[in-house]
Length: 68
Image (cartoon, rainbow, N blue to C red; front, side):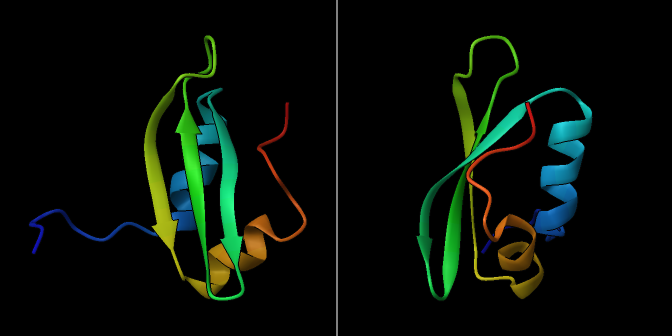
């Protein structure tokens, strides 16, 4: 069990975008999504966000990446 507080996954992606970084959907299932969080200077993957949060599923619905 992690001591890190749970973060709202939509807020994580929005904050990532706001700082100029890129995210990409790497896997999508009916019940969850895996999103790669990538650096803004070359696209190197830094972390992955895996979630079944309905708000996140709605946020990435029809999208494959953050806005360019």
